[in-house]
Amino acid sequence: MSKIISIHSFRGGTGKSNTTANVATLLAMEGKRVGVIDTDIQSPGIHVLFGLTEEDMRHSLNDYLWGKCDIKQAAHDVTASLRAAIPGKVFLIPASIKAGEIARVLREGYDPGLLNDGFQDLVEDLSLDVLMIDTHPGLNEETLLSIAISDALAVILRPDQQDYQGTGVTVEVARKLGVPRMVLVVNKVPSSFDFERIRAQMKQIYNCDVAGVMPHSDEMMTLASAGIFALRYPEHPVTQTLKEIAAQLMA
Amino acid sequence: MGRTARSRAEEVGITPLDLLDLPLPLRKLLILLLRRREMSYEELQAATTQFGPEERLNSTELEAALAGLMERGWLLRQGEHYRVHFRRLDRHIPAESLWRTVEQPNPTAPPPIDD
Ligand SMILES: Nc1ncnc2c1ncn2[C@@H]1O[C@H](COP(=O)(O)OP(=O)(O)O)[C@@H](O)[C@H]1O
Ligand SMILES: [Mg+2]
Image 1 (tube, each protein chain N blue to C red):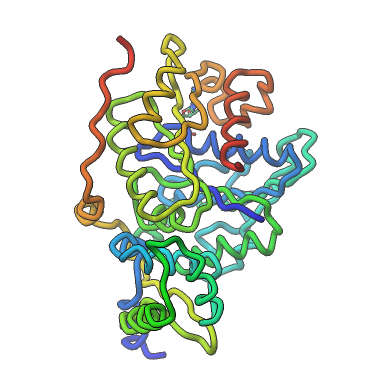
Image 2: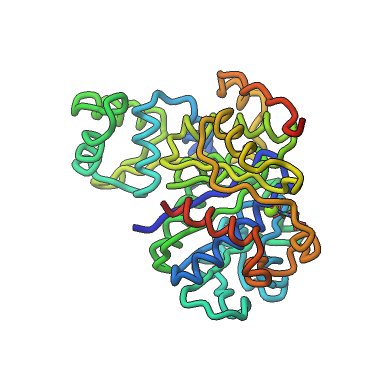
């Protein structure tokens, strides 16, 4: 059975795109066929992690939403660019990074039914085991749709008072939408913190499983989204946690 | 299709935000339809009887639900199959309506983690 997994956070910069790209890669390393779609149309970014440039983007999600191409034509096989022994596949559906095309979606809107059809078509046409949806922070219509049709949702937050409140909203909305599986990921935790205590605290506050607590990592900061952390630092504690998150999302 | 007819057709239809306001059984029904994309009455009937006790619909309730959703323009029937019909999105949902939809206040922020 194929799975659709959304990665969300109420605020930006929490690590959604890095978590999505790394979990996708780790799953492909286990032999899975993984799709990654950038629904952060207003501020796309995950293509950078896979080394996809503007010139490489034959078609984007924007083109699909404007009826210019099939969703499959916007899917880029980025497996080879990972330069690692990967038995599975990673397909990336980027959102356009052209200013005019971002502005056009914002101005004209689009048909959410088409976005849903795109998700479902990708799973079928590319025989995906997993489709991962990288979302825009906060709650907007495409995020609500993504959450509604997901089998699993990871909500990422930092140990920050601003993140705590927003996370409560997302968790509430996801419960209303009846997502079968929801987990929290706490990211960028200073290493001086007691990780087990944070895990227990978050679980209690949100009444939700915690799939992983990731330390703030200088290596991750330094990599600066220029690649897939788990490939660069396979033995790093952050990579171990990313593997746990992948397993929890597939459970 | 003429331009006015087209824009009228785009004015009806559900938005993802509307899903939050629906009674549980209808919400569950529409989300299932989104996942399957389209389903026949028989498929819907088979699926909805498998729903949990609070979401289950018997045949009469299912028929009423489908009729009501079609009436609102939230469902379309093409031949034997039902599909969810979305309204074209104008960007940016008003934050206010979202907060209203989430009736429960946020969980109180925990105390600072480090002591
Ligand atoms: N655990 C971490 N430690 C240090 N930096 C991190 C960590 N996780 C993410 N980052 C950095 O935070 C920034 C935002 O990450 P990103 O994945 O783009 O977040 P989002 O998609 O939620 O906006 C990036 O510069 C990334 O390298
Ligand atoms: Mg991002």
